Each structure stands twice: as C-alpha cells, then as structure tokens.
Length: 114
Image (cartoon, rainbow, N blue to C red; front, side, top):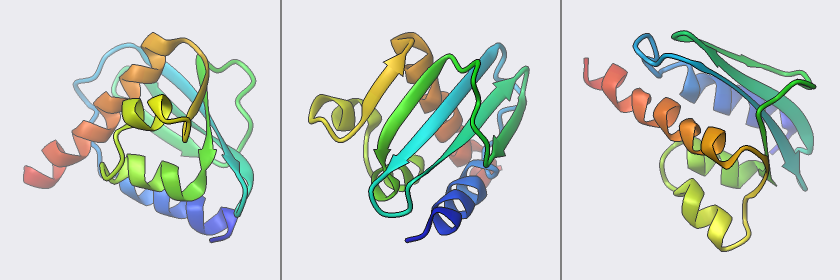
C-alpha cells in the first residue's frame, strides 16, 4: 500500500467514530514504517476529531508501526496492547495517552450502531 492509501483508509475508518462525548485532548502522531512510509496525526479535542497528513510536533504520544498493523488496529482486528507487547507497535511518549486511542477506535462501533 502507498502512504496515501494507508492515510485515506485510516481517516475513513476513524471518521466513523462518534467522539462527541469524549472529553479531553489527545494528539497522536503516527509514524508508518516500511511500505507506505510516512507521518500523519490524529487529534481529539473536546469531542472533535481531526486526522491530517502532517507532522504534529507537540504530540502527546507517537505510534510507530507498519501501515498494515495500524489499519488493523483502527479496524479492531489487532489489539494495540497486544501489538505493543509483541513488538509490532512502538510507543514514544505517554502510555496513558496511548491507551486513549482505544476510546476513538471503540467509538466507531457506537456510531455504526446508532
């Protein structure tokens, strides 16, 4: 997959999430390694989600993984804690903020079921 395909897939999936009731802020930079290498960010601020194809210098946490693995995390086919444990996902920054990504991913179900 190309970077553009990976980014579009992640953005499409995440924009299905209903995060309107998720408070607080999260700035996540995603570094895709290997095929489709590139950087994008996911920002959640008081119920508003942004997914943009830019470097986010002031991020809370950075995920480093392959595009395939990150797409599987977003699609809930790969648990991020498991991916981290087996070394397929590297985390740089706040572990607490990294765990908040699960709120965004789980919010997809809620919107789809609504």
